[in-house]
Image (tube, rainbow, N blue to C red; front, side):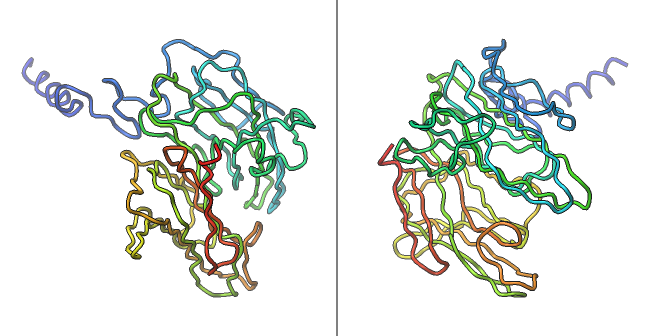
Amino acid sequence: MGTRIIAPLVALAALSSGCGGEPLCLGNEVLFRGACVDPVRRYEPAAELDADNVVAYGEPLQDLDLPPPPKSGFRIVAPPRTLAPGEEVSFCLSWPIPEITHKVVHGGRLYTTPGLHHSNMVAKPLDAELGPNPYPGCHPGAGDPFSNLGAGIPDVLFANSTQVVGEESIQFPEGMGYVLDTTREISTSIHFLNTKTEPQRIELAYDFFTMPAGELAQEVAPFVVQVADFSIPPHTTETVSATCTVFGGHVVSLMPHTHDLAQGFTVDFVTEDGAARRVYEDGAYDLASDIRSYDPPLDLDGASAIRHACLFDNTRDIEVHYGLGLNEMCILFGYIYPPVKQFAGVVAQDGAACSSLQLGLFR
């Protein structure tokens, strides 16, 4: 009887351990310092480090079942809002950054019910004339990442996949993160869209996980490329693309932003002689996360440009342009290191040349 019990236990132990007796991690967990952990919680201390670290507005959440807030980091919660069937709204929300011990953010997690189309969470300097935002409201222009740019390049805390439902995470490779300036405040131009045929209550929260500065080996910074205007005739399939100059560095994450007419999204690194290396490929629009993190990072050495392309199938009876509602977008977002390589590219009109600016030189 003893042999019958021991043999399966030995086999189970062999399956659960790798070489050298290290555990084989399952699901989304990663091996970190001898244990399998959720990657956004790599640097979580055993005891709570930041206690008063939740900033929440509006009614209490009813539908989201949130885990405890980060032990090192902070949580922000949006006021719940109910939309009528088919209703679409865009508005600005803001939060102060709570007092936290560590300033290096190595991961973030979004929690949302259905109805969040997109929200780009940024930290920006306080307006010198108007002062802090009237939380959770905003001063005029506060939701625009590029307003008040002269006061400093904004920190992008989180950008979500289109209409994602449930949870979505961004986690940088071990030893990487962005340094949050806690003298700033958080704001976002948020876009809710109820695609249902009944009223929908939308709830939204974010966790940001921090680590000690001594753990930071590489600081990352956000980059973005977009096609600012394009036109797709009714019942036509077309590809919209941008090829924008890059300035070297290493890419640690990529995320497309399109709407429901998208049938495909690709990203290529392009050399001076036109040779292309495909680094990202995604299919038709869905409600799943499109964020991809790279460990090891993607090396831009030898690449002179990034090209992203959006394949759209306009099944509508109207011409589709860049914009909200029944229109579309073709945007690439990601993080890169070192920060001096940070850039932003824009194509003013589909088919035109890209204007690419190395923002990192102004940090």
